[in-house]
Image (cartoon, rainbow, N blue to C red; front, side, top):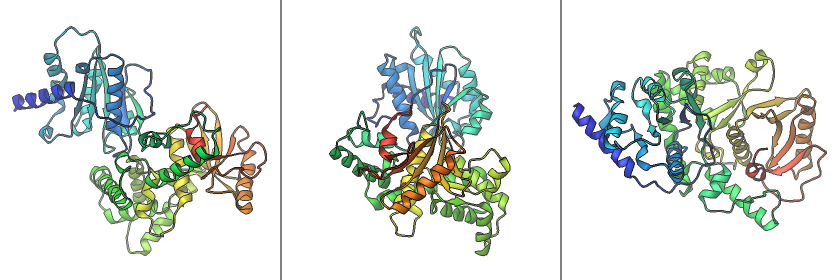
Amino acid sequence: MEVQLSQIIQDKVLASADATLPELTRRDTTLPTIKGKAIAVIGMRRAGKTSYLYQCRADLMTAGRTPSRLIYFNFEDERLGDLRVDQLHLIPDIHLRLFPEPVTESTTLFLDEIQLVPGWETFIRRMLDTPGYEIFLSGSSAKLLSREIATSMRGRAWEISIHPFSFREFLRHHQQEIPANPAALTNRKATALDYQFARFLEIGGFPEAQDLSTPERRQLLQSYIDVLLLRDVIERHRIANVTALRWLVRRLLSSPSSLFSVTKFAADIKSQGIAVGRETLYDYLSHIEDAFLLQTIPVATDSEKRRQVNPRKIYPADPALIPVFDRSGKSNTGHLLETAVFTELQRRQANISYVKTPGNFEVDFLARYPDASEELIQVCTSIDDPDTLARELRALQDAASQYPRAKHLILTLESRLPFPTVPTPIQVLPAWQWMLTEKG
């Protein structure tokens, strides 16, 4: 059996060394400069984690690294179903036997779906302590999750989150021009970006869904959700009340950018004859967030008690997931736009919350960035209506006293200039301009 396993591993190592890298849309995520850490690539299923490993391998080859020292190994192989952690050493051992020439550069292992091998963490820690090895990890959200890495790897991993395409990546994928200065465009070019941005909100950012018809795309995204729930939630957490879980997911994804209360949902579902406790629903919500299907954000406050008692706002991983569960028949453009802005804030590594002002107005986002800057952001499809504009301005102005350092933004769907006059320091921008402008 060991001989057969060795042959399988040898075949995979040789295939990796000779493999032609596929043509893929370049992602804008950058690698850290810190050394001695495993790079752990996390994110929702089908968002592009494996493709990002290919990109990293290609970049190293472009920098002059030898392909035979850059080994991609996918553990999602039925022949490796019984692989044990004490057999993982065969990968570097066989690689060294196949390529015994004097080592003048590090060996980088790209280990995809390694979480399928129980106890994989001990092997990774040992390889990190072995001179001459660099490690990249990627896997489904079933087990290779942020909080689990923090526990099992004890500070030895650096996480990189991969989201579906950003608008910039969407333009690159569809071979559209990306403006060097989004704030200084002719009307014709701005109108063209309005059109592309509307397509982005409809199609979303999942790479596999880009060139599908609407029915095909929705069927594909429904399959993503089904597989995620089965493998990353139901099987992984041994969910007993699957009916309650599916009701919860349906409610969450059909009410994007809205406030959600577990207590209220528990009462609603009980009225439908489905018995489930609040604590169980809190657990289910945590599992769904861990699998990156959606995220919730709290109200902005320094009071932990207030944060706990106030409802949270819900955002799916990608705008294209919203129509999968929306039965209203409405366009839902506002929800699509707000979700796209939220996901961009995640890419920018912002700490995100929503604001309830002293005057009981609501600001969609308070974004606090790693460089200590802040933005108060209102998202609105159009501010042509004076009442709508007045409402958005009141909320921002009321929040200004609480967050005096924050930049004040209203992000709209289109670039139809001139925008109505707004008081300083509030700025009105097309959302796509904000997305295409590098932070800082």
